Amino acid sequence: MRKKSVRTTAKSTEAITETAAKVKETVKAAAKKVEEAAPAEKTAEVVKEVAAKAPEAVQKAEKTVKTATKTAAKTATKAVRKAAGAKVKEVSLEIFETNVSLKDVEKAVKKAVADKGLTGDICIYINAERRAAYYTVNQEGSDEYKVDLGNL
Image 1 (cartoon, rainbow, N blue to C red):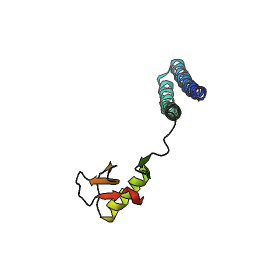
Image 2 (tube, one colour):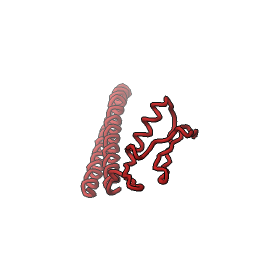
Image 3 (cartoon, one colour):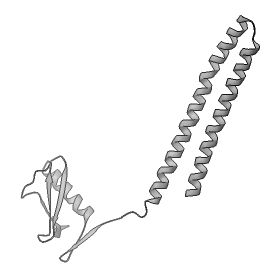
Image 4 (cartoon, rainbow, N blue to C red):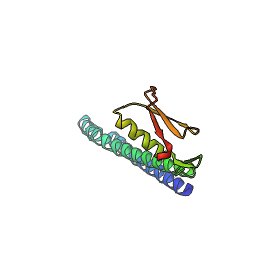
Protein backbone atom coordinates (compact mmCIF):
# COMPACT_ATOMS: atom_id res chain seq x y z
CA MET A 1 0.00 0.00 0.00
CA ARG A 2 2.84 2.33 0.84
CA LYS A 3 4.26 2.06 -2.71
CA LYS A 4 0.87 2.95 -4.20
CA SER A 5 0.64 5.96 -1.88
CA VAL A 6 4.08 7.14 -2.92
CA ARG A 7 3.23 6.68 -6.61
CA THR A 8 -0.01 8.63 -6.24
CA THR A 9 1.76 11.43 -4.40
CA ALA A 10 4.48 11.46 -7.06
CA LYS A 11 1.84 11.70 -9.80
CA SER A 12 0.15 14.56 -7.96
CA THR A 13 3.46 16.36 -7.58
CA GLU A 14 4.19 15.80 -11.27
CA ALA A 15 0.81 17.23 -12.28
CA ILE A 16 1.36 20.32 -10.14
CA THR A 17 4.87 20.80 -11.53
CA GLU A 18 3.64 20.44 -15.13
CA THR A 19 0.83 22.93 -14.58
CA ALA A 20 3.19 25.40 -12.93
CA ALA A 21 5.55 25.06 -15.89
CA LYS A 22 2.70 25.72 -18.34
CA VAL A 23 1.63 28.80 -16.40
CA LYS A 24 5.23 30.00 -16.33
CA GLU A 25 5.55 29.49 -20.10
CA THR A 26 2.30 31.41 -20.70
CA VAL A 27 3.52 34.31 -18.57
CA LYS A 28 6.93 34.33 -20.33
CA ALA A 29 5.27 34.31 -23.74
CA ALA A 30 3.01 37.16 -22.70
CA ALA A 31 5.94 39.17 -21.36
CA LYS A 32 7.84 38.60 -24.61
CA LYS A 33 4.84 39.86 -26.61
CA VAL A 34 4.68 42.97 -24.46
CA GLU A 35 8.39 43.65 -25.00
CA GLU A 36 8.07 43.16 -28.78
CA ALA A 37 5.10 45.49 -29.06
CA ALA A 38 6.74 48.91 -29.18
CA PRO A 39 3.83 51.13 -30.22
CA ALA A 40 1.33 52.00 -27.52
CA GLU A 41 -1.62 50.63 -29.53
CA LYS A 42 -0.06 47.20 -29.89
CA THR A 43 1.00 47.17 -26.25
CA ALA A 44 -2.56 47.82 -25.12
CA GLU A 45 -3.86 44.98 -27.32
CA VAL A 46 -1.19 42.57 -26.10
CA VAL A 47 -1.86 43.50 -22.48
CA LYS A 48 -5.57 42.84 -23.00
CA GLU A 49 -4.80 39.50 -24.64
CA VAL A 50 -2.46 38.49 -21.82
CA ALA A 51 -4.97 39.60 -19.19
CA ALA A 52 -7.64 37.48 -20.88
CA LYS A 53 -5.43 34.37 -20.89
CA ALA A 54 -4.07 34.75 -17.34
CA PRO A 55 -7.28 33.82 -15.45
CA GLU A 56 -7.70 30.76 -17.65
CA ALA A 57 -4.17 29.56 -16.84
CA VAL A 58 -4.66 30.27 -13.15
CA GLN A 59 -7.98 28.37 -13.13
CA LYS A 60 -6.33 25.37 -14.77
CA ALA A 61 -3.55 25.48 -12.17
CA GLU A 62 -6.09 25.74 -9.33
CA LYS A 63 -8.06 22.76 -10.66
CA THR A 64 -4.90 20.67 -10.95
CA VAL A 65 -3.80 21.58 -7.43
CA LYS A 66 -7.27 20.83 -6.00
CA THR A 67 -7.43 17.48 -7.77
CA ALA A 68 -3.93 16.56 -6.64
CA THR A 69 -4.72 17.59 -3.07
CA LYS A 70 -7.94 15.55 -3.00
CA THR A 71 -6.17 12.52 -4.43
CA ALA A 72 -3.35 12.80 -1.91
CA ALA A 73 -5.83 13.21 0.97
CA LYS A 74 -7.84 10.15 -0.11
CA THR A 75 -4.68 8.09 -0.46
CA ALA A 76 -3.44 9.20 2.95
CA THR A 77 -6.80 8.43 4.56
CA LYS A 78 -6.83 4.95 3.06
CA ALA A 79 -3.27 4.34 4.21
CA VAL A 80 -4.09 5.43 7.75
CA ARG A 81 -7.15 3.17 7.85
CA LYS A 82 -5.13 0.20 6.63
CA ALA A 83 -2.34 0.94 9.10
CA ALA A 84 -4.82 1.08 11.98
CA GLY A 85 -4.95 -2.71 11.92
CA ALA A 86 -7.73 -5.18 12.47
CA LYS A 87 -11.28 -4.12 13.19
CA VAL A 88 -13.27 -5.41 16.14
CA LYS A 89 -16.24 -7.22 14.67
CA GLU A 90 -18.18 -7.88 17.88
CA VAL A 91 -17.79 -7.72 21.65
CA SER A 92 -19.66 -10.24 23.81
CA LEU A 93 -20.06 -10.57 27.55
CA GLU A 94 -20.32 -13.92 29.26
CA ILE A 95 -22.04 -13.29 32.58
CA PHE A 96 -23.22 -16.13 34.82
CA GLU A 97 -24.04 -18.52 31.97
CA THR A 98 -25.50 -15.67 29.91
CA ASN A 99 -23.74 -14.72 26.67
CA VAL A 100 -24.72 -11.27 25.37
CA SER A 101 -23.43 -9.17 22.49
CA LEU A 102 -22.90 -5.50 23.26
CA LYS A 103 -24.59 -4.69 19.95
CA ASP A 104 -27.67 -6.60 21.10
CA VAL A 105 -27.65 -4.72 24.42
CA GLU A 106 -27.43 -1.41 22.56
CA LYS A 107 -30.30 -2.37 20.22
CA ALA A 108 -32.50 -3.49 23.13
CA VAL A 109 -31.85 -0.27 25.06
CA LYS A 110 -32.57 1.88 22.00
CA LYS A 111 -35.82 -0.03 21.46
CA ALA A 112 -36.82 0.43 25.11
CA VAL A 113 -36.06 4.15 24.92
CA ALA A 114 -38.10 4.50 21.73
CA ASP A 115 -41.00 2.52 23.25
CA LYS A 116 -41.07 4.93 26.20
CA GLY A 117 -41.04 7.93 23.81
CA LEU A 118 -37.74 9.27 25.18
CA THR A 119 -35.14 11.16 23.17
CA GLY A 120 -31.64 12.38 23.91
CA ASP A 121 -28.22 11.06 24.92
CA ILE A 122 -28.24 7.49 26.19
CA CYS A 123 -25.70 6.01 28.62
CA ILE A 124 -25.75 2.25 29.29
CA TYR A 125 -24.53 0.61 32.52
CA ILE A 126 -24.25 -3.18 32.75
CA ASN A 127 -24.76 -4.79 36.15
CA ALA A 128 -23.41 -8.34 35.94
CA GLU A 129 -24.75 -9.41 39.32
CA ARG A 130 -28.34 -8.51 38.40
CA ARG A 131 -27.91 -9.58 34.76
CA ALA A 132 -29.34 -6.28 33.60
CA ALA A 133 -28.41 -3.24 31.53
CA TYR A 134 -29.51 0.01 33.11
CA TYR A 135 -29.61 3.22 31.11
CA THR A 136 -30.05 6.93 31.49
CA VAL A 137 -31.47 9.38 28.98
CA ASN A 138 -30.05 12.90 29.16
CA GLN A 139 -28.41 11.89 32.47
CA GLU A 140 -31.79 11.07 34.04
CA GLY A 141 -32.46 7.56 35.23
CA SER A 142 -35.29 5.56 36.73
CA ASP A 143 -35.86 2.06 38.11
CA GLU A 144 -37.88 1.43 34.95
CA TYR A 145 -34.90 2.21 32.69
CA LYS A 146 -33.68 -1.39 32.64
CA VAL A 147 -33.21 -4.21 30.11
CA ASP A 148 -32.99 -7.83 31.31
CA LEU A 149 -29.92 -9.44 29.73
CA GLY A 150 -31.42 -12.92 30.13
CA ASN A 151 -34.06 -12.05 27.54
CA LEU A 152 -31.58 -11.13 24.81
